[in-house]
Length: 280
Ligand SMILES: [Zn+2]
Image (cartoon, rainbow, N blue to C red; front, top):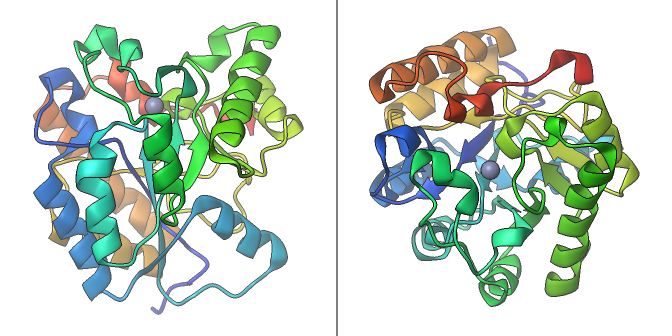
């Protein structure tokens, strides 16, 4: 089986750091492991793309490179500048960073339940510099709420304000959105489109294909339990069949969740795995 270059894995990271509470462990990858992941991708011959570039290639029917992967990083933690960006740059790789604009230059107040509200976020000047290095900066709402619990007016503000602030500060169009906690409902999805985004990322343990809704691009959660060799086998499975990657990725993810004590759905961080299928 040769697989299809149209099947593009979209990887999701959060913090690249050595420190995390048990509750947040799933969302932290140590810098050394992150570098090993990138080295594995490099040695397998993968090239990287931003999410908007991927969405544009798909919309225009541009043939994709043989081995393509998209790296996304949510929440704009300050460790992106210290740990992730140098590792990406050393391989000439690009990524997409999703920014909750209400916390730029501050701390991760939305993570109080996980006792992770002390994490520093990048400043606007750092984001400007980062966006000049081939990193796409997308919106991740303003205050990182559970969007489906808001009324329409508040949804509109969260989506529109995050776009406007990023565009003002970065001086470029912001066209990609990532749903906080990885999921959305139909109203949120429609508003993201109506407010001028061309694509949006969700979280599902699936490789992305051209058949996907551009406003529900599935992403694979990469935890610190995914060793570089695991990542390589996940991506090689992606080249053969979407179903195979699904089971492979789920096995890796559930191993990680078991180790982190988060196996039961309904605990706060595992909401990242949810996607409301009726909303597509
Ligand atoms: Zn987030």
